[in-house]
Image (tube, rainbow, N blue to C red):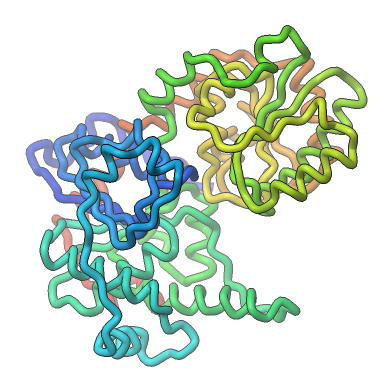
Length: 446
């Protein structure tokens, strides 16, 4: 596995060169992507660059982390109760982007995709790409950094209709798979194939790629035939001043103050990808051997099924699902153990956040992220995906023999905001000094 980028804090190409950088993301909901986008913006702003954040939906759950110097743009005015309550100042700053789905745009989209009917965009994606195109024409940023597949697609489609296109550098946050196999779930298969074909068409327009782990970089090379030299691995900025201030607060859960047994913690969206069902079953094996309790922070479609598993195992008094919380770091700094049970991720920011809080970590060894963060088990335990017995044994052992919290915090410093910002700055300045074209350039997708 290739080593991490060896950029140091002094490796700045031109300190006096200020760039205008646009970050594109669907929304700033409760996931790790939104938080990492905000802290990348913070780091770039601190280094003297102008930063815009383009949102497709007016959904903001990180009001305390949105940089005041960053300009916020939005396409669709979709909000939720939490956004209305906690992000009023950010909502007031949003600049609405014009978007349309006129017939001419559908023709332009079809032409951009070489009339490949397998991946023609839907109405919403067409509107989003129109909004991004209007932003590019009026604001003229030096470079565009889209996050996640829909933001990437909208950005590249927007670029197809413009004469002057800034470098587009997608930040790939998840493992990309070449999925052509037959499946009984035909609708799901069609969607996966459509996404794969769309990416192959559009990635030829990328000036470069950033991936959040070496495992993700490998998947982009293998699935989309992108040359490895066109991909730079830059770890997400996970250790922030905001985290360090919030971890000193008290968690809003009574189990940390009643003098009871140790608390095992996990954080994430209640979805099949996070595989909390395996975590709960593994915890039941641990709870049969010793006194302990489990808290899972997050909300999602799997809540009812997970609550059913808890009832079936008779763990109602030992497992708590309190929902989404604004300050998970206070929980991490007081928990005895942090567990990630995911089937797949692109990086695993919560692992770094737990290390920064001095909390011992266990993670499933999915293809990208945890082995790099935990340095193949040196700073935490890795277990096979979906193996509840191995997970239970690892939990039992780490509760008995926790590592030194100071060593965990020291490892977390490798994922600081400043280091990530310097890495992006060096890459983007190099791209602007040595511009490349999109289609037909060396290493482009065939």
